[in-house]
Length: 212
Image (cartoon, rainbow, N blue to C red; front, side, top):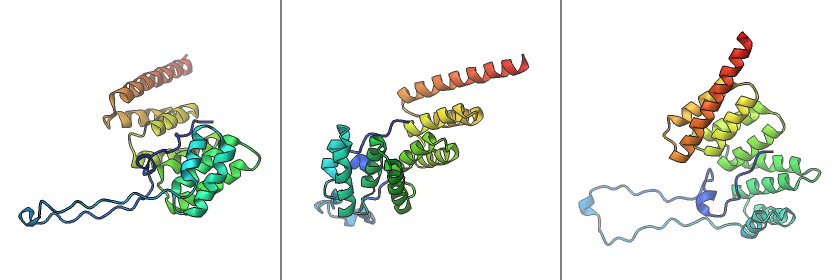
């Protein structure tokens, strides 16, 4: 099975795909009429639900039996806090006991119903679908992620590799060329360029075998 994204440990990471309350920006208006001494409005941080922080700690230590009930507590405490669902699903899948996978899929379905574009939940769902050889479903999830985050490294890597393995070499190549056009960070750019060279080499070798 693919690696899951690391459990979110900060609100900055948690906000990936999750709706946090944001104050509306005031109209700038006439700058000459604005007072420089006017205090800045602070956007309140969303409070984490009961049990969530402790669950994160246990999850980071791979102690899933203790993390799972705490995430379940967090969901009861705040049913709208989507990261609880995604992290709980990951813990269930990692633990791998009978019935855990079905429970994980159920929690993901609930979270994606609330927020269909949640990056973390889409990624976990894609990993499950790929592991179940439901490649069309996995591709759909990865592409949804890339629609929101075109430079999402893990989604680009997983999608291009999966497409290549399933014989969709043209589509795999398109994923890599598209992200290279988005001016990714230098380190990632080198990886994509090397992957593209390897892919083109495989395509060339396959073409020679057919003509030979």
